[in-house]
Image: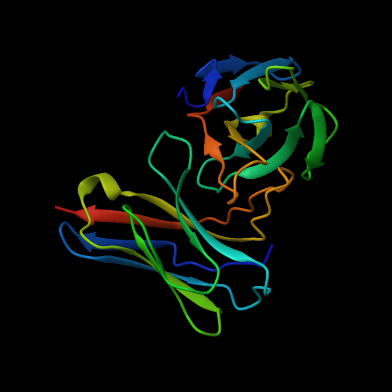
Length: 113
Length: 114
């Protein structure tokens, strides 16, 4: 899996959009960008993933640059419940059931009331 | 649909002892992965079981071992516990029948080694 780099921490005001950047300059053509988050004292939770097109689901949007060397996770209207550590992971995303996820140290996002 | 469950939630052991942690995978999932998460770090992959066979292992010594049962639940065993084994142990289940690779994590077992 390609190495990813994220800022260690960020703050965001409640109700505003939270934009979490991730650098993955060595990502290969068959690697997806996955985002997971871990709320305190819980296991990580899948948020979204993408290959090269922008993606949106009920939780977030994912913007991937055209050269695929970086991406941004967007939480459009952050709430206090979005306070968590967010992990950006480059992964091949096969469905063979034999792949590990390589977590870095992530970005600790704090939503400020 | 029942999610991933782990037991126990907390455990205290002393150095040199042995411990067994348990995980029940989400219904319909045939793959279980175990991760170790030290304080302030991201989860680190220990190993994965797919249809009762070990199917990939991270950089952990042989005293970390596991099992997967026919119902796809799993156990993580750690022998000769060391102080550095103190961590949150996470189990994640997934299925090779899905089109994306999404792992569903349990709440973890917090192990303290004294």
